[in-house]
Every structure is written in structure tokens, then in C-alpha cells.
Length: 174
Image 1 (cartoon, rainbow, N blue to C red):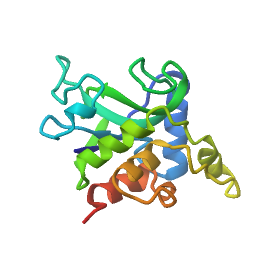
Image 2: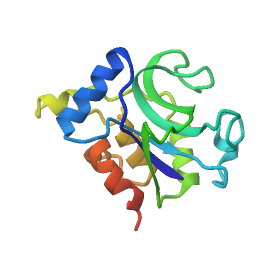
Image 3: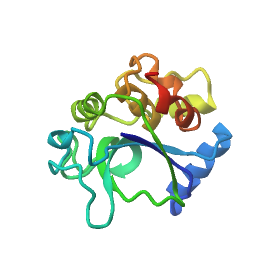
């Protein structure tokens, strides 16, 4: 299992969000994905039943997103905007930094499968700007989801962001 940290800029409004997150966090990263590799024993938990690379080289990734529609295979809220989801992504090294994670891939995949469709934590994002706005315990940002899937207690997952997640999460269970 890998941790992928997004260092590029998407077009349009998402690109503005990428820049604002990197500026606020003083980080090269604006998004986090947990990546399941072909040798991870989690094929039965993936939407298509496989962890093999697709023809385009993409792998199954899991995260929480703000401004994407949840895929049709999502068990909850398919087609709705934002939330925890699985998605195949071709990890272009020009756009992503990737590190191994020392977490249990089965537990991580189970966490994502059971939380698929859970809402995005907009309140935590607002808390970046106004410290007195708390996050919501049943909603997830990308790095919160990765931390919880890696074994962080849910009430502590908010402490991980795309900047420190690239440092903390690969060795979370050491």
C-alpha cells in the first residue's frame, strides 16, 4: 500500500483550491490518496474485484474529495458531490509523490469500503481559515480519511493534513 501526495495543479476551480491549500499549509501538497498495489490482498474489497493495474496503468486509490461526483460504483451517494470514494488513478510522477505506507492494507480497504460515500468535511477546511470552526466527526477530508484508514483514532485523524501526512502516514504504525 502506498501514500500518494498531489503536487500538481488541476484546471479551473479545483486548481485554485490546490493553490490555496498549498499556500495555507506552506506545502507542496494539496491532496492525499491511499493507493492499493497489485500484491495487496484486498481485491475482494475493490469495486471491480481486482488490484491489478488497468490498461492505462492506473491503480485503485481511495480518499475523500470535495468537488468530484462520487462514482457509480459507490455504495452510498453515487453521483453526488464530495465524499469518501474509490477511484482508479494513473499516478504520473510529475503530479504525485508516492511513498510506501506501513499500515495494514486490508484494514485500510475495509475502512474505505465501510465509509464509502461519507460526506466531505467542509467544516475542517473552514477551520483552516477560522480556528474556532471545528471539524465534523462523521465527515472526512482526504488526509483525515487516509489517517483513519491507516489506524489513527477517528478523533485524532483531523490532525493529519496533506503537508504532514506525507511525513507521518508512511510510518504511522512504526
